[in-house]
Image (cartoon, rainbow, N blue to C red; front, side, top):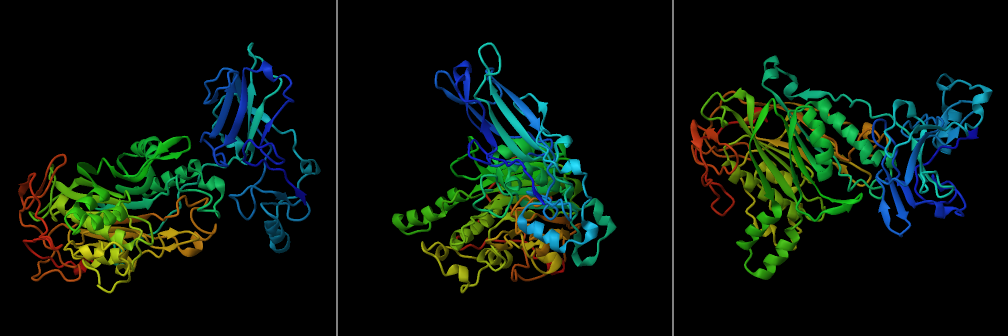
Length: 615
């Protein structure tokens, strides 16, 4: 075997093996108008076809001023070079090879372990072809110039080849300075991600009526993992380039487009990613997007301050926005704490524990295709079905079950105040709560057992102040279709479980099908998530719904275990947004919602519906 010499993504260090180097002895440095002080790839970036290679270049002028050059400095020129082909590892196609076997298998490997595995275990029909003797020589001189610009987007011809960026200072008369050049060498170029993998849809009850095709709408929920949090320390098993936003954003977009959902709810979307990537890219696919950042201080990231939050998209050919509201859990908590805790000291302590900056984004949409068919259905300005879509990201701290439950309580309470309890609901998001949690039980059952484990830790007395009962009937898409939640929606080395859900109103919506979630054997192909083929540490959830054509069968009696629902009979609801919606044939103008009596129970009038057949 022979050891190959692949270029490694790196920085400015001049030590042996570094990919950044400086030429010349420095004796003629005064001839240059600027000095190259630093040049490096953004966090070990791996170049991707059709995506600009992000390189940071810092210069210093003769006055000692340091500045970043983005291509505007006339005292320096750039040159991009394409290197020799370096094949990927046979066993790990997402990794560059470090070893080439020229004696037996004639394949390339990323490590000694892979080489020994191939040498001893690989069947002969999988071996490569024996190369010509000439090709065994190290291709030292195979570097060709491909561009003379500051920016460069790799092409198909660059795949499996490293790139080198030369930064060359110029003299006053425009000649190349005799010293001071610096170079940055990348890893091998990889192609843009392949089309998203196909995921099988599982129908509810194993049947699907062809008549539903014209009435159904698809919903997709996904925590896409903000670049802020995609660090090597958190995900040490993931290749550096696979963690880079420049790679992951393509995979995320392909999966979003492949699902062709009518409504998309995303969490951990950075504001700059929303503005520069998601909104323009999805607009081309026919979506309109709404964004709400978490109420936290901006974080300095990659040269600028940014935040992350929730983004909701909807197909403009299917839905029209009627209203939009933001639920700020910190503000809602402040109002709730003020009238709940007996003294200021305990109230301040509780508020400090509750102030985490989490939010929910609520959007009321009117269906442009499906009109309401009876007086019991909520309709919009154009007579179409109205749907309240809530997108939230609840606190992730595993030691703060009390805060999570408080946020869940505030969420349902805020939805009730916005809709009056009359409107079909979709509550999607990352709830950071397993199916065994108090949050899940509260949503599903309408109450929480007094002996629930999550209620034991209540350092500020938050849970004691809540009356944990509500009358909002909710079910999850996956549990409804398959009898259980998805096995995994979050899969890392440190945690494997279900945290994400698509909750819906079973009295007004039917779930027709859900998308199958990857099994564990697929998720462990590269140890855990994220990986080179799965761009987030979360798995997306997809479900197909349909509005009920007519009211479900009436039933006397109240709510039982979250399976009954009372609808307000013609009561006004709070409507502070654009347009109005109707219920029971009368316009629901801006007014005071039917409110809780202070004990967590809402005054409900009207009829109860049997929805067991839909669960």
